[in-house]
Structure formats: C-alpha cells, structure tokens
Amino acid sequence: MENMSLKEYAKQARKRLMTGYWENVSKDRANFLRTHYSNNDNISQLKTMFKRKVEREIFGAPNDSPDEQLYAKVVNLLSQNEYVLNPIMQLIDHEVYDKLDDNAKQNYIFELTDKYNELKHRYDLEYKKNDLIAC
Image 1 (cartoon, one colour):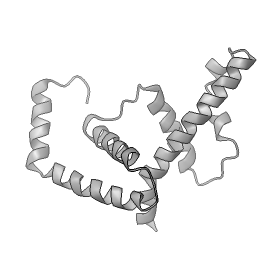
Image 2: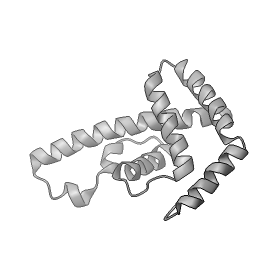
Image 3: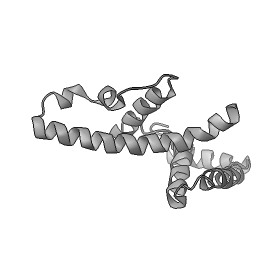
C-alpha cells in the first residue's frame, strides 16, 4: 500500500469494520494461540507473531527491510521439499561477506546463524498451521 492518503486508509479501515474483519481476526488469534500454546511455545512471542501477521495483511510486508528480505529467503529455502545441508552458506550475502576480515567473517556467521534460528522459528509457527490443514 504505497503512498496512500489518509482518506484512503480511513476507507479501508471502515471497510474492515463493516465486513467483520476484526471479529474474524479475534477468532483466528484465539485458534492460533490455542494451537501453538499446546505445543509449549512462548505465549507473548506468539501474540507478537500474530500481531505482525495482521500488520502484514493490512499494511503489506515491508519488503525493503533487510530482515524481511532474509525471511523471504528462509521461507523459500525451507519451503522446498528437500533437506538443506548447510542453510547458512546459502543465506550469506557474499557482497558483504567477501570484504570482511577473518574475525568479522566469524561474527557475521554467528549473527546470521542467530537470525536464521529466529526466522526458522517464525516460519515454523506461521506455516505449521498450514501443514496441519494440508494433512
């Protein structure tokens, strides 16, 4: 939703209210929390993830964010029905990585690994529900 005026945002908000969008979100949130809380996931983290999911539905995904670009790569990588031997090496940005010295390369790998683990957990939470439905 690029360069929308306040009036256009208000129209969309009114449309969401009129169509019962928020009632559906409330039911979906309850189902989402019930499903994932039974899997011993952190409830506050689940609430935050669902909030982000709704924000992406309303405002669109901020594709220019580096974390969202990395998440798109992780989703693509994990969505393939193949076993990925070394996902970190596939996520490395070689334009950045190749210019670093050895210590900086090591730190880059550690930071990328942490981000990958966070994004993989996010992927599991967001797509686990879809996998259960598909079975």
